[in-house]
Length: 342
Ligand code: ADP
Figure 1 (cartoon, rainbow, N blue to C red):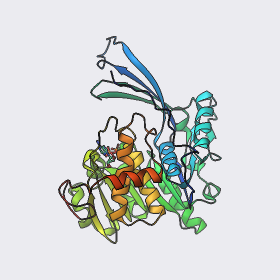
Figure 2: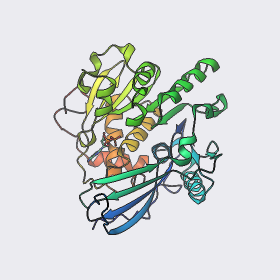
Figure 3: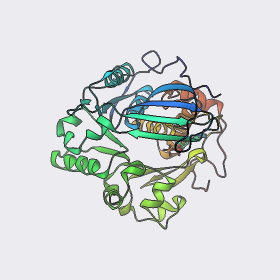
């Protein structure tokens, strides 16, 4: 049976290093994830015994906030929780991770804190059910000019283009240069949202997509050929995540580079995308160019896949540095930092 227990080691205060002067605000969901280990997934109307139950703290935006904080960058989080014990728990945990929680809202309608219920087979196949709850109450109107006091970069997670549009408008009307990172996820580009994400992409500083989402946004172009698109269609930077094959990074000035993933004994890739984003944001805060950013973000994500739970393996800067020192340059068809095919 797969052990779903969270090791007691936390990346909290004891391990955090001195924060850099940049502050990243992440916006989106925080969730309580309940994972049930089952021998096999049930068919409709069937009963299957649960062999282990574990709870994890999750939610992409909250995961990224914890990730950048552990990497030594100041982090703040904005989301909506229920007036319940889970909401109190998330505030406590995020604060203990050094994340500024002063922007967190409480549901006005009595909605409960967002929950994910998952059933996981020994081989890793899983079914996930998501209850948005209080998280669904977050609206673009919750973002006002005050929200960004002291903030250098805003990262939107699994939210629709209406949030990015609002940020762009607020930036224009206040005359403030606001760096916007956007990880819309499948839901954020679904249906009529797709053409709106395409329209705002050029105003985004960093866009995160996986290969499937890239194909929807930019049909007829392979990820490796993203540089052939007109720069007026593209964000300033883009990460195209390829799971265990690594990632492409696009930069308006430097074109596209391929960065293979590190070969690690991965046990759970949940949260790998959030860890990769945290690595990119922390690296960008230190002005890393793509050649350094790719391996750095791949390393942060690889460390997360080696443990169960989205946040358990989120590393400190010291941990990433020692991991990188023990790794030879990944060589999955092409050296990191050069344009290549995975
Ligand atoms: P998402 O969950 O957002 O779709 P991916 O599954 O593509 O994201 O994973 C994000 C990153 O995590 C990858 O680009 C890679 O760096 C790392 N990663 C994912 N799976 C593995 C794995 N099995 N081994 C090593 N690194 C991995």
